[in-house]
Image (cartoon, rainbow, N blue to C red; front, side):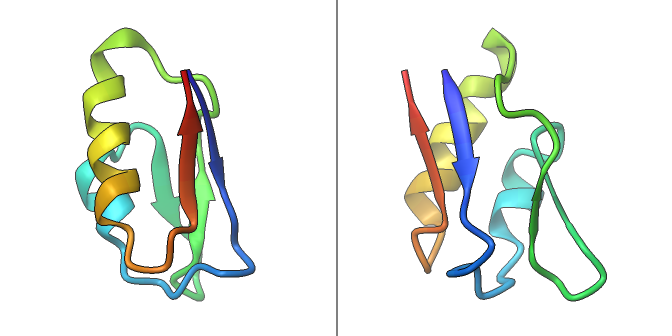
Length: 63
C-alpha cells in the first residue's frame, strides 16, 4: 500500500489523524501531514477508512 495526502485540497477536518494516527497527523494550520507513506499491514484498514471518510478527498491510497 502507498498512501498520499494532498495538502492543497485538505480542509483540516482531522478525520484521517483520528482514524489512523500512526499514518496521519495535522500541522499547526490543521492540514494533513503524512507520517508514513507506506504503512504496515496493521495500519492498512485504518488508512482505507480514513480515505473513505475524508470529506475533501485529500487522502488516497494504492494497493
